[in-house]
Structure formats: C-alpha cells, structure tokens
Image (cartoon, rainbow over all chains, first blue to last red):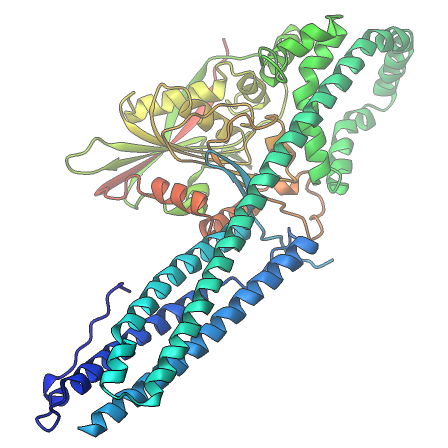
Length: 105
Length: 484
C-alpha cells in the first residue's frame, strides 16, 4: 500500500461539451478525487482494524491489568469500526454528489 | 487441570531489561502498526478533505450530499485521530509494563541473591559445628553400612538406583519453577557457604562474591568441587581424542531453532555400546566467500563422577562450570580444527545442555569469528556472551539444568523461556522431564513462530548465515577420553 492515490478519470466523461461551467467541472473532478482518496482511507482503516489484537489471551497474564487491557483494546476496535462506518458513509455521499453533478451535464 | 502443554513463551534480553510474554510483545508491535496506519489514514483524510473546498462547493452549487460527505469526513478524522492516540497509549503502556516487570524482576532477583548469600554464609559458619556433632556418629553408621553390604550387597547397591526411581516417581518436585529458583539461588550461594565454612569474615565473603566484585561465584565453587573430587579420584580431567564418525554431502543450512536442535547429535547407549556422535560440523561453501561452519554440540552422555571414556561427562560439566578447559570443550575445539575451522572462519554454534555450555564458552572465547549462538537447556547463566552476533537461549522455567549455571549475567542474548509442564501432569518414570529434547523441540517450534521483534530479528540474522551456500558437507565426530 502506498501513500499516494492515483485518480484515473476519463477527461471525455468529465469534459462533456454540454457542460461548460468550469466550476461544475472542477467540482466533479474534485469530488471524484475525494471518492478515490476515501477508498484508500477505507482500505487503511480496514487493514488497521484487522491488526488490532484480540485482547489478553495469554495464560501468563491474569487479573485487573488483563481486564483493563482487554477493555481498552475492545474500545479501540469499536472506535475503528465506527470510523470505518463513517468513512463508508462519506464515500456514499461523495459518490451521490459525483453522480448528481455529472447529471447536470 | 487441562492436560495440554503450556505454549506461552516469555521473551527477554536482546540488550533490554524488558521481560514479557511473546504474546504481549506481539500485541505491542501490532498496536504500534495500528498507530502508524492510523496516522497515514489521518493524513489521507486531511488530503481528501482539502480537495473539495467550501468555496468550490458554493461556486458549483454542489448538492447537499457533497456537504454531507464533508461532515462525515470531519467526523471520521476525529475518530481516526482518537483511535490513533488510543493505540499509541496502549502500546506505550504495554512496553512500560514489560520494562517495569523486567526492572522489578531484576530487583527481586538481586534481593533474593543477597538473602541466599547471607543464608549460605550462616550455613557455612555452622558446618564445622555440624561436622563436630555428626563426626562421632559416623563410625557406627559406616560400620552398619559395611555389615549391610556384606549381608545384603544387592540391596545396598540398589540404593542409588532406588533414589533415582524415587525422583522419577516424584518428578513434580524437580519439575517446578520454585525448585528451579531455589537451585539457582543455591548455586549462587555455594561460594558463601564455603566462605562461611572456612571462617572468613562475612564482609570479605560478600566483597568477593557475585553480589559485589564477582571474584568468587559459581565458577570458583565448581573449581573447588573439581579440586576436592580430584583428591578422591573423581572429576579428574584427561586428554581427549576426537575422530570422524561419518561424513556426508548435501542438504542445506538450517532454518529456525527447531531445525538447529534436530541437528545437534545425540550419544545414546546401544546394545553394542554407545552410538551416535558428540559434535557435528557443517561446512557451507559459497563461491567468492570464505567457508562458513556450523558446530552442533551434544549434551552430557555420562553422569558418573568418575571419568570414563565419554568426553561429555559429569567431569566436563563441573570443569566447564568452573570455566576451565573441560574435556568436552577441548573435544569440540579439536573437531573444529579437523574440520578446517580457523580463527577467521565465520562460525555459528548450537548446543544442548552441556553442549550449550560448550557452545557458549567457545562462542564467547574470542578465539573464533562467531556469527551466532543457540543454546538449549544449558547452564550458561554466569557466562558473558558479548555482543556482535545473534544469540538465542532456550530455557524451561521448570528445568533445573539451566539453573545450575546460576543467575543470568548478560542481558544481550535473547532468552526465550517456557514452563514446559505448567498445565499438565509430568510423565511417569522420568526424573527431569522438562529437560527432555522433545519438550525443548516444542519450545523451539513455538519460538520459530513467535512475534516478538527481538526474537524475530535474532532468528532472521541466524538464518542468514550460510543461506547462499552452494555446497554443504556434514561431519560427525566422536570424542573420547584417553587414559594416561
């Protein structure tokens, strides 16, 4: 996984001759780039979520510290699950915005 | 109690005082990876947010869904940053816990050693008195033993065997971390007992002991035992002769700890006498590079205090613990010389039990171009192994053999520990089941699959040795004592 996200957009589909408003074209390009970036963020978050430990399972660690650790790790997992849901929602809204802007052409 | 082996490893060393289970170190590493991934995700979200500006949305009369997306991105950014901070905090606390445990463990060990030294000195001071009390009773006891030996010689001769059987039947007594800790403390206190028995001032014994200057310690105690034994014809060193047993070509360098343990030879008693070898030397030839060598050293083959033909015997054990030129050490040096190992040849050492002590002694001697060391169930505690090469030591916390080496003096090697019989019954009829090679093989397999970066890095460095070898030869040597 790299830190850069490449957005491949067919200029013909964006620079529709019928659409002459440069602001709309710019918005459509920007929203498409945002959509691609959000896909990358989602992949990163899912990768991070998969690496969150299951919580103290070792048989050499017991007691309150183990419980506190397990609770902290579960909360971290919960935060990441929520973040993933929110990024998915952001993706959906962005995709809808791209479609709406495109339909104006 | 579940009848399953304990698969939990404890990892320490590698130049750090931290002590923790491999699982805990693995969790810390995973959380650090999560933290780093979330930092990258956070940066990517900021970039994604910056692509679509509010001004652009207004100019283009963007739909409400675009504004909803902006709001969700802001929300996601807050969640990701909070999660990243939480991951960083948990990882930090895990590392701090491992560090704190290591510091506390070290402090407890030092206090226990001080107490054991004081107790040992007191016992030593009482020994002459005890001897004076017991001495009058000795002649009748010896006379009774003599009569018993004349009347029932078989029963008297069976006493040592009976003791061994009793230990085998009650092996939980020996296979116990508490017993192991006591043995370790006892080994560290023998010099104090001797000092007390000789009537030396407590301050002098303390100043010379391993708690202070380290002039006297388990090595000097072993030297005293060797000297005392020699007066009775026991534990006497002899010259050794090493000869080639078998030689074969092919194969490849080992990968991981389990494969290294498999290559350590075993000397066993057969119907026609002892079989197998003591030392295996593998030679790795790579074009354009000096030949590399891997030396594998067996454990003790003879536990009799009277030196016989076996070079790997109790005499070598005691002499080796005294850090004197044991027959087993000289045998391995001879095998290496015969195999073509020079002072400049890159060489890795591996050994089991006494073989581990021999391997560590040679690796740390400065006489060889050491590129790695693996010891399994070896009493190497008091050896300073030095830096500059990967060293991995496997020990069972319920195995008394490593405890015979005393407290660990060097935190550079990676120490991998496991309680072999933590959650299951010990097998019947075996005195020290936790010293069994099969048990150590399981530990080696677990270590090969471990996550702790300290251990993973050391294994990677060990496995890099001889990796490009185009030709591998393996020679097995037998080492025997020579009667003068």
